[in-house]
Length: 348
Image 1 (cartoon, rainbow, N blue to C red):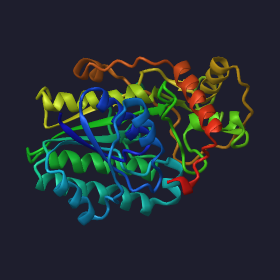
Image 2: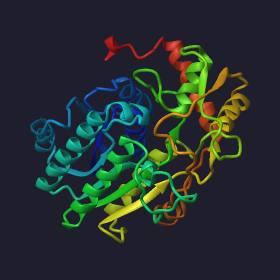
Image 3: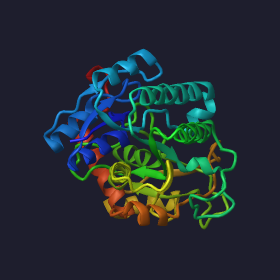
Image 4: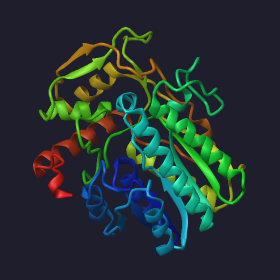
């Protein structure tokens, strides 16, 4: 089995990707400093797969500790890099923290990849790199415009760093530009677990519905969209996770046409915030309490993907619907309530 290092493996996307990798025959290890996560997701991965995943509690901004992981695991065949801060609104409030955490950790990781001659690297990027696009859906050829937030800027800079490193010809790389990951694993054992008040729409919906937080605020209803709320491309977390397994397989099988390839990961369907709320209500039978508020800094009015390249080259086809997203997210939220798991730090 090929050994894959997953950074941020205890997080939302990282844990689902660990599960998918194990299910497709890979050996996996994780590195996560638990700054915004805990062991809960790895426990869930073990319940689903029967495999215990080792996690190194290491801050990738510390080069020596990062280097020690590679020294101990000199047979790492590939790295999938998720570890980064990810909240658009928070990045506007704390830009220096975002630039330091995201870029220093990436550089340290690539220094180790170069030294240990790790041949394959998959980078977790974002549709925020497109800024506020002139037209949608966006393709991989859509011009990169100024980012609408420091978070988006960190992803643009990260892509530049990875693509420049790839030019050395020592490591083949893939940049995966996500749209809006949502939902939970159908088993109910892993899902999205924000450490503080959630920033993403789906956990806001489920936490409000279950009474963990108050009413939902829809940030703006005066955008130039069909109902005035922002349009996003919601993709089920299991579909997103599987794309990473496919990307790593493409690199290992030498099917990549360039040293650094780029793929959009989205369904290709633009959904408004108000439509997402309606989908939750219809798929669960639970009525939501929400109100309209002012626009939120850093939000773009509308963005969704053209996924033709990912489908043609990776063989990636999303299987889950918007209703599946809402239903699995709701089942996960109810399981957390049954367990009494409100993310108590004492458990981690």
